[in-house]
Each structure stands twice: as structure tokens, then as C-alpha cells.
Amino acid sequence: MVRTEHDIVAQVQVAKSDSEAADALIRQYTGFIRSETVKFIHTAPENGHEDELSIAMLAFYEAVLAYEKSRGAFLPFAARAIRNRLIDHYRTEKRRGNVISLHTPLSGEEDGGELLDTIPDAADPAEDYAVRTAGQQEIQEFSEKLARFGLTFSDVADNCPRQERTFAACRRVLDFARTRPELLKRVEDTGKLPMNELAAGSGTDRKTMERHRKYLAAILLAFTNGYEIIRGHLCQIAPAKGGSVK
Image (cartoon, helix red, strand yellow):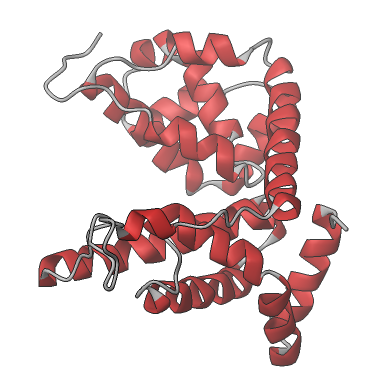
């Protein structure tokens, strides 16, 4: 049975202070944890990658401890925590020269079989559906919030900074706003950007802000209610190096 996001959040809140509940939650979502591990290593954890599965389980538990409702849906949050942990592990192993190729020949195989051939279909339809549904709900809610500014996702994409210095200027505005929760709340409540306050607090030229008002509105709104998926995309959009202010 597919659990709703409300059910999952309730379980997570209990697990934060109850070790037995945390263990039960990890067991319940072992399929999800394993699936996220396979997505990263592209092979079964049993094929010499037991450490990665253990790391993923630890990351899931850390996600339980760190999670707050303001961070959005739990499963996407946990998936990112798992991926980040595995990336750190991969980088460490790469420096040590311990990365295993997926084209390593299988021992005892005479037909040229490789490790890649042993990758199972580890998809968990129920968990994949839960993650997908959480993402759709977040996008729908954020779209409705943008509409209060008279904006669409296309408007925001068209208004993204294209030059390095302009992008950095917009990030300064965001960095300033994130230290002022009351300012973000005002943006959300009024549907307006306090341009003078943002310009003065961030040291950013108001003309630059005006040119990218739509992008700034979107990225500030993304930090008002834990839109993890949305703001992950917005914050990763960066111009090529060496640009000048547009």
C-alpha cells in the first residue's frame, strides 16, 4: 500500500526520538534505500558494494534526524541525503584508487560476462510513486505561489541570469534574504519584492535586480516553505564562467 506524505512525516517525527521506531522505519524503507544506492552505483550492493548500502542506510537515518516539515517532502529529502553521502564516499575511494569498474569480468564466467550484466531490476514501484507524487505536489503548489506574482515557470526560465556577475549579484540578494526570515515571510504574504531593502542589504545594484525581478521572486519564494526540489533546480542554474553583467 502506498503511504501518503502525511503518514511518512508522522513516522519520521516519532523516529527522531525513538530508536526502535527509527530502526523500524529503516526496515520499512530498505527497498527505497537500496533503490537509491543502485541508482548511484549502477549495480547490486551485494556485488562488492555492501559498504555503499550501509552508507546509504546511515544517510537515511541522518535524514530522519535532520528532517523538518519546512524542508518539503521527506523522501526526496532522504534521496538527496543518500546521494550526497555516496558522492562523498565515491570521492574518497577515487582518491585511494579503489573504484571498481562495471566492466570487471565475472570470476568463473567463460562467456565474457561482466559485472554490469548482474545489475538487477531493483525498482520499487511503491516508493518511486511516492517520490514522484511528492515532487508533483511540490511543483503544483509552487506554480500556484508563482501565480500570485503573475509568473509562470517559463517566465522564470527566460529571466534567469545569463552572465556570471549577474548570477552572483542575484545570489547575494538571496543570501541576504535568507538571513531575514521575516523578510521572506513578507514576500510570501504580500506577493511583492521589497526592492529597496534587498538592494541596500545585499549591496546589489537595483537596476540589476529589476532586470531579473522574476527570477529573484521565484528563488526567494522557493526558500519560504522548504521547496527542496524546486530550489535545487533554481540554485544549480549558473552561467558559464567569464561572463560579464548583462
